[in-house]
Length: 569
Image 1 (cartoon, one colour):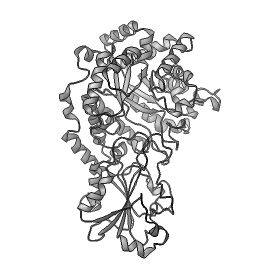
Image 2: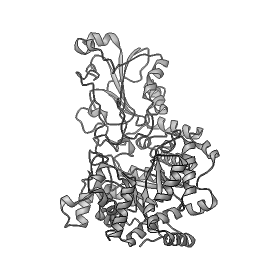
Image 3: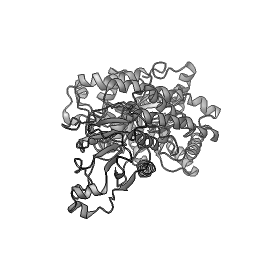
Image 4: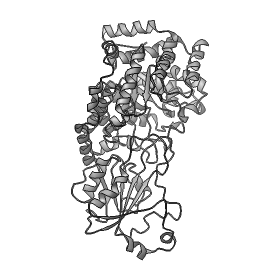
């Protein structure tokens, strides 16, 4: 059923014996628990003790908290659990994916823009070091999707770009960094996001490539990921109709399912055609892309039958466990399939050395290990990748470098989310820009979105604008976030009052600290910079490069002109 001695497990005889013995000793209820990774909300020890003893979870994920609190919570849960647990985190951009005070190294697209694979290794290493320090041992990364549709609101700067060769090189280096510090990867999102313009948090999205085109792009990436020994793969709520119908020609269009529920894609393509022997986990099952595909009580066991080994998150955890029990009781889910799934989960834990660490009391280190969190070396690496990644997309008006002598009066437009929503990697440093520009000698006026100047909107002309500022600087931080259908510039709806209508009278430049595709909405701006990650280290590098103190070194990993005519003028 499962080859425990083959890639990616490579278990020794004693490890195989542990897996087989442990599986035999588990009750059906404990086996069900191993197949779930709930999200953690409560850190009170009394609650955690009751939770572990009732649900026996195989894994858990906590959103970022202060490192000391995460470490304490993980340690207590490991003490309470009979089987060593996997503790997961979205380690996409650094240690801040698990520790709120961890290092925000860089978004993957920043790393790709540096064109330096060493930075991908450092992304993995920083994430691995800081995760290990708090007892986190499972990374929901790297992302090996391709950013092929500039309208996609969820992939974007989370990817290494649109070129499969670059994605392969950088994903493998990130994997190497994670592995070096004992953190297993769940590479995501099989069969591949970034073709559709929609977010699977909101709808079952579609990878519409032909089987041949998928093989040459996403398929090539997945083969390399599997060959590199990734222990687990996260499957998305993404349809791949071409391969589903290739493997099952009798399948009707309306019966095609997202990968997280598709036997064709998981057992047929991922296990069969690609030869993946490791553990498969669903993406978060509260997503609409999962829930809208099938009644939940049917979907939970259907995912296991399709080839998944673990269910990520719950709506009502007791309902989900009962759905699994009911499917076992009525024969829709066989104990043979349950045992296969649990075997892979246990094999992954054995391959990571978790049983020995539990026996030795070393699953979670002590408080001294927290010294690595946001340490000077990690922050230095973050400054370096910021320097290497900031990209000058165009300066067709010859504006750069700027200086207070040329452009003393600056109007600063900060284009950012006015409302909260979705999960982001960290806080933005966009609000530090005004102070940093003023420190350089510029006189900066911030555009007041709360109280727009109605006289300027309805009566002001060219002379009015020219009397107020010498240079307009637009800085956008519309960062990738879940559960949002669009990540575009949303100009003030009243006469597009903040839009750069004046570019032929007063020069303007644009800096994006996240989404690299804003030229689709602002092609008239002739000086455009992509910086990909909204950290203070990146903001400092942007200012240095605007003032000519540092050269632009970044190489765009995607088409920033979005195929829009005139965007490159």
